[in-house]
Amino acid sequence: MKIIRKLFVLFCFILLGCKKENNTLKVEQVLKNENNIILRYSDKKEKFWSIQIPIMVEITNSSSNEINFLSSNYIYNNQIGNNSSLFSISETGKLLRLSTSEIKKIKSHQKTNYLIYSQHLIDTIKFDEKFFTNYLEKQKSSHQDTLIVGTLNLFKIKHPNFLEDLIKGDSLEFQFLTPDSKFEKPIKIPVAW
Image (cartoon, rainbow, N blue to C red):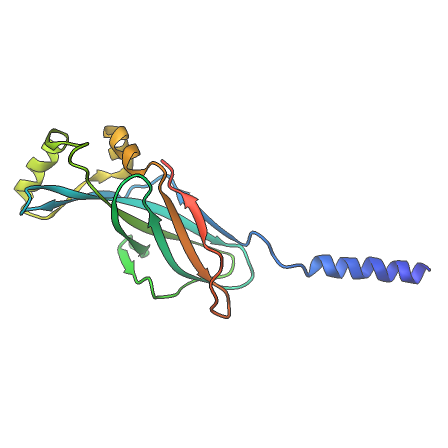
């Protein structure tokens, strides 16, 4: 009887020790973000038509296996959006645009940061020319179709209502692949400010 009990305890110990790892993948938005907001200007329409907002995310792989990250998607809730772009950040701080079809490897027990630029179309009925007056003057003197208007953190201080209106209810979705290249259930997180 004692042998059976010991075997049962040993069996339970092995079974519990070999269970599949849970919560091995974590995706979080990094709120301290010193990346620049970009306004895009149309010479033809003589106004700003979109704003690109940087969102930094950190993907943590706490498993003992490499994870395949396929793509990210910015989901626009209350505004019309164009698309989004995914970037990795080099050791020198340079942004490197990544393809959505390219598999990005996240090594075992590693954290990797990515930058996503959303592209919100500007509703000129809600936000008239007066709102953009300072930026229009800067844009016209630069003779470019894009204007860097400062970091996300500074822009939040200057225009909290504008930013909140743009991103309210928005979310990010991340697609990962299993080791045998099958789709995992997407991970969705809300965009926070």
